Length: 219
Picture 1: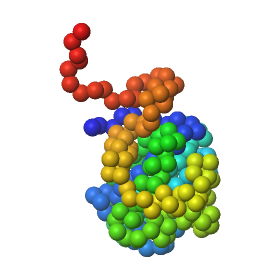
Picture 2: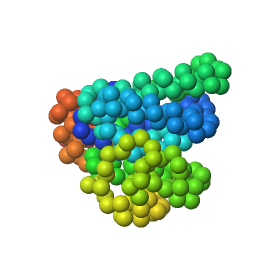
Picture 3: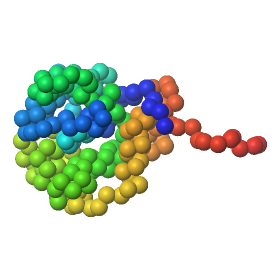
Picture 4: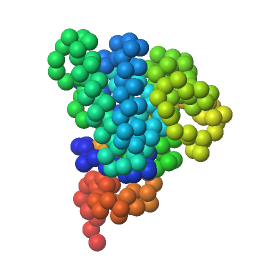
């Protein structure tokens, strides 16, 4: 299913993801991760982008963010351009580092919690660690312990308590939930309850819900 025009809604959570071109590695060592996060921090502050969660994998990244302005998501355009130049110089290559423009979708708060779990459990699903909090390059540990050594994060305790979050991250992933998050992120269609989507359609003046397949029913 093709992507729709990007939807950006101020003060609502957005899932962001982007992969390396042809699945190539985009982080080789800790220095790369640190440099990347520094540019994310710099441009998110400049463009008033709040970060709720993140996870850096070897060949892709995930973020849960909340824009304060219509152009806040451009923080990723600027940070990724800077990082691409840095990384290509490092490996002495030319060409595109990233696979096209980043993917994004707007979520209601209920689905945002599920998406943050999906983001922070990426290394667990990839069998790189046993616990999400063991992965150095994500927000999982900060959300559980309150100790943050990475980029500044918004407090998500209004969504779920730290104690509950630790238990929640240990629960197995539901494949149906993962598929829904991936589908909406890949197409750009907002993810939420029907009333949430209806309000967004009225607010933005455009259709956001996918049309049902098949012939219309006869009267």
